[in-house]
Structure formats: structure tokens, C-alpha cells
Amino acid sequence: MDATTEVIEIGAGEPMSAQPTQVQTNPVPAIQEVVEPVQEVFVQETSVPAVPPPAEPSGSLALFTGYANIGVGFIVLAVLGMYIAGLGIWAAHIKVTGRDEGIEWMERAVSTLFWLLVILGILRFVQYNPQLAMQIVAVVVVAIGGWLAIQAVRASGEGDDEH
Image 1: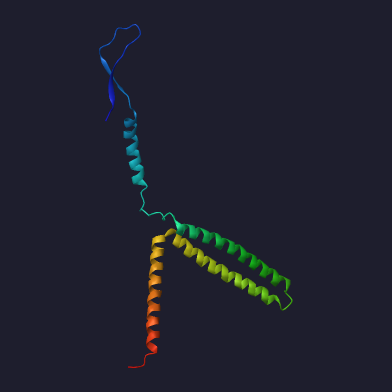
Image 2 (image 1 turned 30 degrees about the vertical axis):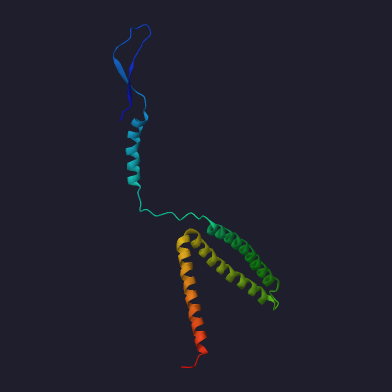
């Protein structure tokens, strides 16, 4: 696809030449012919199995998980403060029987940090797999609803001993 036009050259003081000369007016196609094979070779040499990127969070679910992440961050700061306070209590009461209270504070702080890590993992899963997370929530809600229905039927049947 060469875009060419015929041009008649007119020189200074020379008579007009009737021989047309071809001049390329759009050099981009010629450049593209050279660049495209290079791009194809590069893509072929570096191709790896396609892994889809995580879904971009959007909507109210992303807003909820964002605020939840911020809240968990504040709680982590508070728990770290609690651990440091427990360490201080323990250090202040090394030779006194009150040091067990400091150890209890540190134990509570560590267990709270563990649960915060679990919550952060769940939030990340919900944030990057919203459809699957909502399907899991739907199954859990249906299961709880079924269990409640069964419990209601059993409770209503316990008072009837007429059989």
C-alpha cells in the first residue's frame, strides 16, 4: 500500500520536464512494514502463559473493603500500642507478682493481631474476587436460612404429641 503521487519537477531556469517523478507522500506505511515484524517477533519470544489480572475493585463493595482496610489499620496501631503497654507493665513489675497482667496484655495483643491478619486476608479475597465472594456469601445465607427453617419446623412439631 504505497501512497504515491506523480510530481513534475520544475527547476530554476530550466524548461519544464514532462517526465513525472514518484514521490512518497506518506512514509508511515513503509515504517509500519518494518516495525510490525519486529513487534511480532518480540511478542512471540517473550510470550508466557496468560494469567488474568485481578479484577479491579469498583462500586460499593470496593468502598466497603477500603474503609474496612483503614479500620483494620487503626486497630493494628491500637493493638501494637497495647502490646507495648503490656511489655511496659511486665518490665515495671519484673520482681513483683503483677507481671502476669503484662503478660496477659501481650497475649491478647498477639491473638488480636492474628485475627486481624485473618480479616485482612478475607478482605483482600473479597476485594479482588468480588463475584466469587458474593457467591460464597449467597450459599452461606441460603444454608443458614435452610437451617433456621428446619429448626422452626422441629420446634413447632415438639408440642404436638397427638400421634
